[in-house]
Image 1 (cartoon, rainbow, N blue to C red):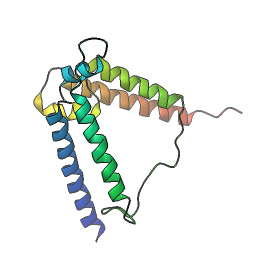
Image 2: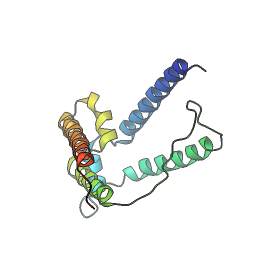
Image 3: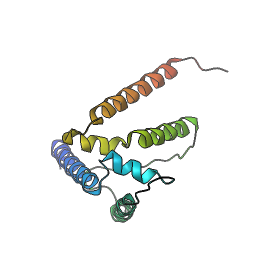
Length: 152
């Protein structure tokens, strides 16, 4: 398969996966901040409805990874690209804490926020803009740190 044909198939597969993922988030209620915040409010008026959505996602992902990894390579790429290091460092812990705090306060994480944009729910666009600004700041900070001289 030529590289241009492979690129087209990769783009179409990405579009299909994104539409399926976004539709699943919307169908499961993950694009409604009130539902997400109700799920996270275990000490108050807890809404356990997202347990089924998350459980189904874990099962589908588990089975999907097992099926895909049986082949010698992915269908639309020359090789698998898997992480080789699993370092738990300060940046990972800080990022996880910020993600969790943002998810709890806003009721959104990146995927559901992007899936909710077409619904024009209040606060969604502001969340996405703030998320993109945060991503940009991290890129700038990392670039700045890479330019700093190393200490002996």
